[in-house]
Length: 386
Image (cartoon, rainbow, N blue to C red; front, side, top):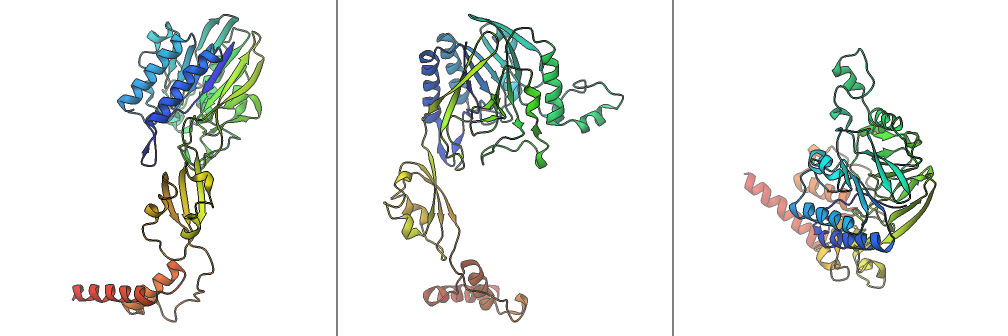
């Protein structure tokens, strides 16, 4: 059988102020085409279907229509909620959908149960492990203890709840092969700037050892495609970039799994959205069209290194980079060395304090017209105060 592993669609998300709706529609079209062209038997969506708990209506309609088209193409669908999704909104009709070949799970309801599905080449045990927020676990979830419910809740971690769920599932495996689908931060994964942190201080991480009982584990949450230790524990990554740190190629994973559970892994390149570029230099350097030709058609983050403030930087850069999204001033060079004032800041005259502040921030003292503007502003403020 052939499995197409995807995750983190984040339907409804924008890139800064720019809507990604058209790109997400193109991805869904491409996905359905791949299901047919690659003779896919099972499509996996490993969480973060939507970008927020209350998804826009058009995003819900896009997901529904895409699932309908996948089923019409002959593939089964297995999807879970992620930390961005509202679990109760993703899977309110899961038991009704099961009979249609669409398996959707969210939250703790039924977590740890195994779904047995017969494919043309034999049975597959499906283990759907949606994002499990430790503090949202039912009091009865986990090991029995004499401690009260509050104490058990205090001790719960992402590791402990997922460990309990995978242990429950492993005792029910009956088929020669199995597939786990999980949304979590597995230790050893490489992050980008666009994942929402699950927990502060690393306590949101879980061990890859939890997935040892399964033939293949389809992971979601991290946006960079990667394997974790072994070929059969993988993140597919996002289908398009959602931050400037996602300058890598985007792809989906194809898993050829034989009747015994042995897997052969391949990838499909996905190119449905603009790529991203971070460019750096003075405003004059960045406005040179020959300096960063690869960035002309990309979403651009421009880091401007001029020591003085550049007025209307975005509108100037848009003449060369029409899709510039973010401007970051990071002055460089050899700023004037300030050894410290001979008196404390509260003893300076207002005009002198403004000039000293400007010098420290910009790296050089104001002069000429700029100095006159600052002195005039200070004088005007003093007049208003009196």
